[in-house]
Image (cartoon, rainbow, N blue to C red; front, top):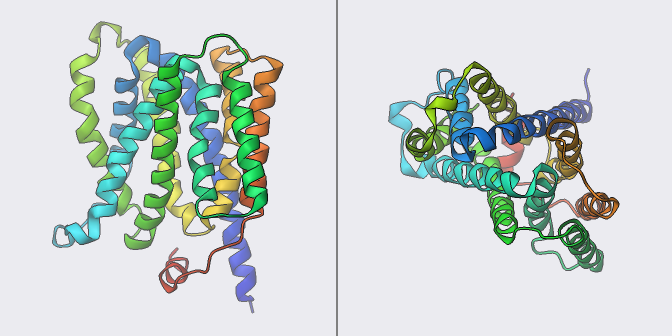
Length: 299
């Protein structure tokens, strides 16, 4: 007979390992997107990502017409707006700052979410350390475009909202139904703009292939798995694993985009990740609601 705790442990291990894989996938996809931004622009890249996500999930997880009520769907609708804002601001920041720097600043979002409501001295220390890491990253290598930093901070705020809304959507709607609705909303917001601004003369087979690859790796796979993951691991563990994202992004920035970082910038990236990891790992778990406990029994 299987003990309930063994089943819970297995679910957590599956969720955690899947989250690691999504971090690799999304940052590799973002590095491919970094190659495309100078060619077609960030709006086109993000629009293609959302179209691919919608194509991947909508045929299998369409909500029933009788269930299309505002009360039931508003978190998914809000998630669609957040997806559009998060991806567009992030890729605009990547185009200005580079992948490694943009990804590290963007991580301030989930870090701030982890700090929300905390009064522990350790968290205050870690917040100061993160701020020092960001200064090392952005203030030690000549001019850093303030517009790029502002866009990265917008992506950070959107990412925090994405985590909250994805958790809510995962608990309210079955399967990937919430993601289906969110992807349609984001596509409706971005696709008309992309069709208007794109330079069609630059869309050859190689560019189209890279756009599809970026969409699959950065959106279709990670977003499809996020609802699966957040039913199996708590938001804190999700955030701990995500704290390694800037390091993964930096690696792909170097390997794929040829980015260069000074030793101080690399130190800043590592400091941000370690300080955030300490804060999240030492935080107390909040009490679980009956709704969350029930949702975790959903396969």
